[in-house]
Image (cartoon, rainbow, N blue to C red):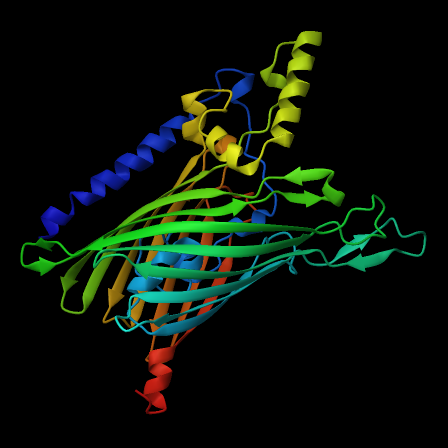
Length: 402
């Protein structure tokens, strides 16, 4: 049986090699560093230790309390009636010590057939304390910029193997501090929605029942976030996530899952002056292209994001990042995880390994993860995450309520 399962591993290695091959040296100035520009980038930070320890993935992994971020449609297949999870991540800890992400997520299943779930998440991303040097000669004031979001979701099984989910989200970004700031900028609000799907089946390989799952999630489909009274609009980080997960038994009480996620930002690439001819005519074309990009609606931008890269198909493929991860489980109580995240150097250059572990009891589960960046100068190196999850079925069992 292990021999048959091992056929799945070369597929994951092949995907990794295909994307790494796009790392080839630049052929022209148009191949220079050109990441997709979005607002409220904290929405893309993985909140929980489990997903982060496998290289930031979770589109098709086993449902848990933090599925709202990865794929909310998984809640309909959750084994427990409900759960609540609190996660904490010190961010950019190699540079500063007061930036962090706090995340509270939970769900509750209902219905006579136990095939529906409601869920909610509260995220708070603090950018620490910033000195306002424009407040005069008295030393200025201390400012505390932050970003936050709150969302609610609903998921439902549409068959024994397939479910879908939808999420509605309110976003607030206070990077402009206040009206008293020098440029008069203020915080900005936005609304977005997610739509997702999850399919799972249980194939028999040899004499063992395995689980093969597929998932997808289009997140943050919504309005632009308008900074500075609407003078500086920015696209939300609309993202397409596709993933698969294959779980098989190694022995009694021992399971291993192999997982793969692919991500692409559904945001049009901002025009650059270097992509246009020199001279007046090229300048006019660039200004027009930039104005069109700035005035483009988010929905139009989603479709435009598949065909607007200046380098053609090669450039579009560079915008796809991937995560490979594995999770070992013993008796659903002890967990070991590892994974790798890759983003093309010309599209952000985030590349790191994740490792982690977890321990679960009837009532709670504690997970921790650690990030190891492949670049020594990466500010994301040595990032820690902690997640504490409370299981509602376990709490009911303690108090003797069925």
